Length: 271
Length: 304
Image 1: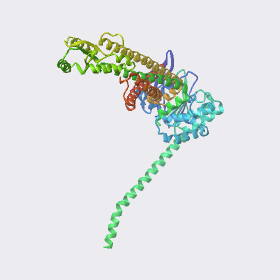
Image 2: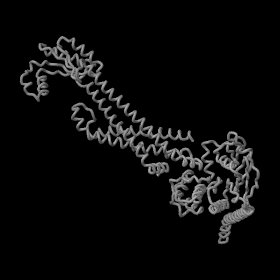
Image 3: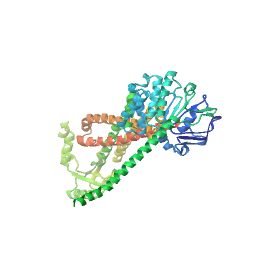
């Protein structure tokens, strides 16, 4: 299990941002968290990042209670999570490449590896030709892709996207969504907060709908059947390969054991 | 290159005027500090010189015998409070007089050795003993008069001279330290303001870094490196300018003070003194940079 919310509540003054919500998110899921403004979407994401602390309830990330994570351990939790923001939050004084490299520097990846990894993610988000440009030279969609590339470059196990298409036109939004889907197909778990109906309406992905801090609809876990089949197939393949390897090694061992006897036999015959 | 140093250099490159003003203030502070450090050293040397040179002269009566002189000389030499006892005969006194008045030969032509008294010159191991020794020597039957050589004008006793000298040096030191203190505080505040401005302008960056999992060390280190760069640059430039100034002035200063060893003898010894000053200033500069940047960071974290 990637994430579990167990009766989580969060209050800001008189406003109940979340009221005892519970849900589980499995590895590899793509979950839309939807609802109108002020329904608690961003609060959920901030609780996962431990920017906020729940007033009651418990959040488990990869089986570990977030409440047990000390503040000095917090950076290491966040390093496992890639974040994409509505306002992109790219560093204006740094080039696209440098913005992505920041993620690697934070995690402590050796500089020798930076080039390859940055090139790889920039290719994935379609910005390989814009790598030396500054944010002021990019469009909104491109900036969002930079933000996505920075989140992806550290190979996180979970990606949180807070209204990533909030400031983008429909065409650009579709482009960004395709990238997110591609990332999810590669096995990454994604939680996307959005109020764009057009994004999730036709999608078969799981949707958790919020209203006034409560879950009003949860379409349930949808690690797609195709994915399940693929997973099962790969597991079968793996086990078959394992068996084959074991057989091979058994045969080799037998041969080894038999060889000295054969040699002895030959010598006896010679004598 | 270290990632933090690289980032710090990047910040400096992006805001060159802030960097320039920080470096300028620190350069000024450490220039004055270096100059004053040498002044404090020199004033200490002047005081030591006056404290240890032969200061007391016991003028002897004309009718005394060499045995009496020898007896008094032995008595003074055996006293632990007294050192460097020297007998100056009437002839030697005349020769000293002639040397002192060589600019005006008429003054020396009219005098003969008989008018100069023979004397015993000596110094005390500690100036605090001076007045007591003078009073004791005065009581000796063969001594007509006791005088002291150091005079800054108008002092009645040797103690007055030393007290006045000590006062001057005290004011030089207190004034100097106060001035350096004020400059140090202004440097610290300038550094604090510039680093705080830098953090404020980087608020978004710090926020992003925090969210993507940067450790506090990762966020703080470039800021501390930046302050250290300003500080080291300020120390080095301030020290270099002061060193050049002292090298330029040294011949004039040495000729003005004559035999008083106001500065170390030889360029090597002078350079060693300046290297020691540089080392001390680098330590002070590092402490200034570390305290300034850490305070700015903690203030920024509180306001977040």
